[in-house]
Length: 276
Length: 168
Image 1 (tube, rainbow over the protein chains, first blue to last red):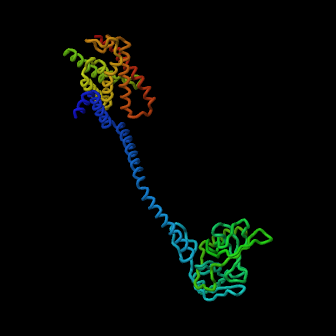
Image 2: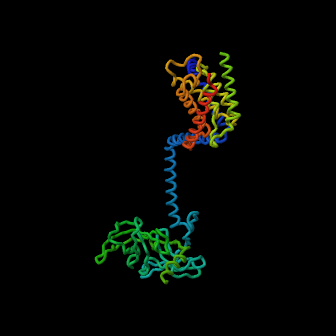
Image 3: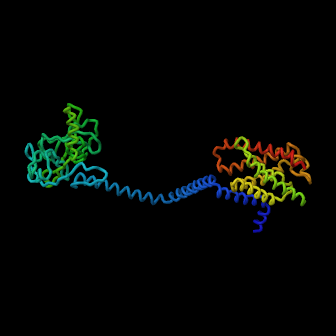
């Protein structure tokens, strides 16, 4: 206290000047509009800078919790992606999505008659024109690709299954995008052949083969089968790949008929240009 | 002593009146108002009490501010001029120091001394004044030119006053 008094007495000139000067500046800011605006803008900037600085520091302390929350959210999002894929391609009859327009609709059907041992194998389904089935619709099962609708009656439809030499389906590797076509060679109902895969592609036994987007009939990434045997043919630079079909035609009861809502548009574009 | 006080007080009042009535209405080159009232600080005796010095500066500044309706601007600038006055006097102390019974007039200490003394105080006064006017250092060079003109005019008038009014 004594020291303070001594300090005040010693520097009374400067302190009094400071006091008066502060009064003057308060008056300036109080009664002069332009100076007032500038003062306020400067003080606002300084305040917001201080605020953001403290905020940055406090955020640093929260990083751990935020990281945990984010990783949790990532996990849920990842799970939901997997779920939605499954539901679009396999189970659900119709997927409602606010982001994407619906391209495929699924009509569930029951198999009434089926063959696997003939040169051309057909399946009969219990859904027909009345239920919205049309010619050239794809047929899939939860296990994978089944076939394509070739003729329709009022309440039934006839499906050419993949177990038919005339039926070629465009396919690709799930791990990369090398594509070829899958066709049945007519001997074993579990086996089919994948051709047109170039030799520089890396192919291993067990690779997954799925449908690709070339087909205007099948949705992309429908399971076809797994590679069971790979050998190089002698007269060209393509692999001959044996695949095991994922669909077990002997043990098939329920299938989905796939309706591509944009088929006509794409057909018109692709085929129309060809004829032009 | 009482006489010195009376004459100084009378001169300060006269200077303020002159500033308000006459110099406020002169604007040289359309923008330069000579702030002659700084003479109130310049003519104060050497040995004036420092608190009295600041109080006088405050009152003078306030009166000028009332005439300009710019409350605070001239108070701040005049206070600053009063604050640096003792240091300026110390800086330019002549050989043998300031004599008793003399005043900080050109008549006693010569042109060069008075020019340095007045120019420094007027310069600081104007710098502070324009800082309080603009409250920023944007357009600094524009205001710098403005200030140089204003300082010159004010200094010229102050030195004239030393030849014609404050002779003793």
